[in-house]
Length: 127
Image (tube, rainbow, N blue to C red; front, side):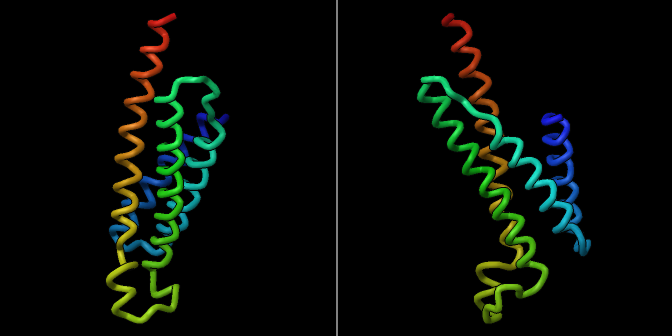
């Protein structure tokens, strides 16, 4: 069940992000639901071993998850000036900056998924 929620959440995130680029109104909601599902399933996973590298990679995954959720907030704010900021501040710091946080989060996820897999293989070979 967790794997299905994880995959559906990831798909909703992709659909929401792509639809948001094309200015589809409810794209934020699709992305937000997907981000909550995806990140909650990743938060349920844990590593209880003593390998320092895997513990560090796990913390990076959590940072990436928080960036995915922050991306949803920025997508909402990009729908209009939701924070009540003056126009110049809004344009400089909020409008469409969700793309940057999404990119950073995706790169971190890609890096950690590759490194966690290789570290787990190293541990398996040691045994």
